[in-house]
Image (cartoon, rainbow, N blue to C red; front, side, top):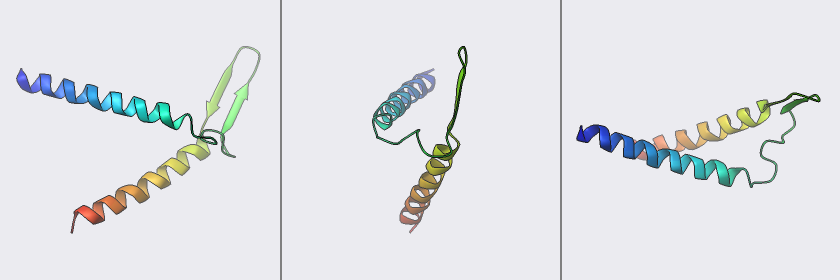
Length: 74
């Protein structure tokens, strides 16, 4: 039961950290407004497809994680 408690506390801390990062990222100008991000709006419906932002985030995370793995595997 103690392990479950530690897991839940760790998961909660991770979610708080992730929420803070997302909150701060929303204040960076240009994020979510890249060319290639599709926005569909009608009178009663609105939908946002961040295609270009997802690709850019994927490339950035791939580079960062590859660099970190190369540094820590030495």
